[in-house]
Each structure stands twice: as C-alpha cells, then as structure tokens.
Image 1: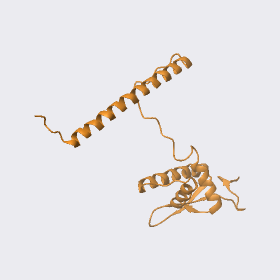
Image 2: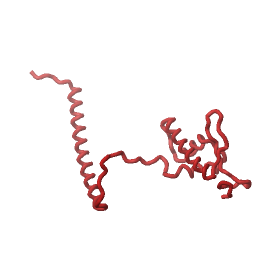
Image 3: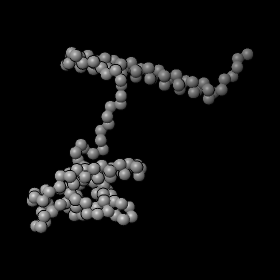
Image 4: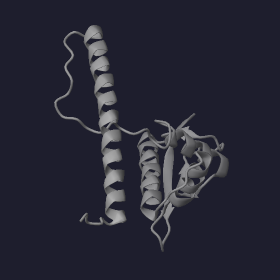
Length: 156
C-alpha cells in the first residue's frame, strides 16, 4: 500500500529542485563569462592575474564625485547664511535624493559639513555660529566690504 505524501512537502521540493537547476544554469553562464573576461584581460595585459580575494564591487555614489561642495557654494551664494541641515536639505533636493532613514540623512549632512570645513580651511566659507538647541553650524561665504566673495581676505 502506497503512503500518501503531503502535497505541501512535494510542492516545496519541486520548487527547490527547480531553483537549484536555475542556479546551476546561471553559475555555468557566469563561469563562461568570467573565463572570457579573464582571457581578454590577459591579452590586454599578459602579467594580469585575477585577485585571490573576491569582494563586492564599489557601488556608484548617490551624488556625482565632487558634486556636493560646488552645490553648497552655489546655495550659499544664492541664499546667504544657512545652517548645515538647511544646506543638506537643499542639496539633497537639488540632486533629487530621498533618504530611507534618519541615519542616512545625518550621514549626508555630515558629508555637507566636511565639504564646508574644507572651504573654511581655504578661506572661502566661515562659521557664523551654532544653533543653541541642535548644535547645527551656520555657514556663510566670506565676503569683503564690497560684498564680493573673498579668499582669505583677498577679493575673488
């Protein structure tokens, strides 16, 4: 007499067997592509050897490299004095960014602060104060008596 098997178990097994076969097929394709790329790299540079340790490729940034600092300068030129959170919010809007968490938003604000600190060392931007409640730094461009932006005391 044949034992009746639970349908949920046989269905699950069939799904997993199909997934295994799909993964094996994909692995075969990936290995074929890697072999072709390795060959092409060896033709271009005979001394090239594949890395021993495999790591995840670097992901593209949310903002083009070197894009945040000029955006902050432009915002300060347009708006005058702004706090770091205001600058971060305006810069994020300019690059059409949305943050999934408060931590991601704070990380972006930290990047804005770092860019402005570099400009502060160059004499382009200056700190005008801090918000007493939040501690947010207020920034403005360094200007001369004529209202023009200056570089460490020299008119730009």
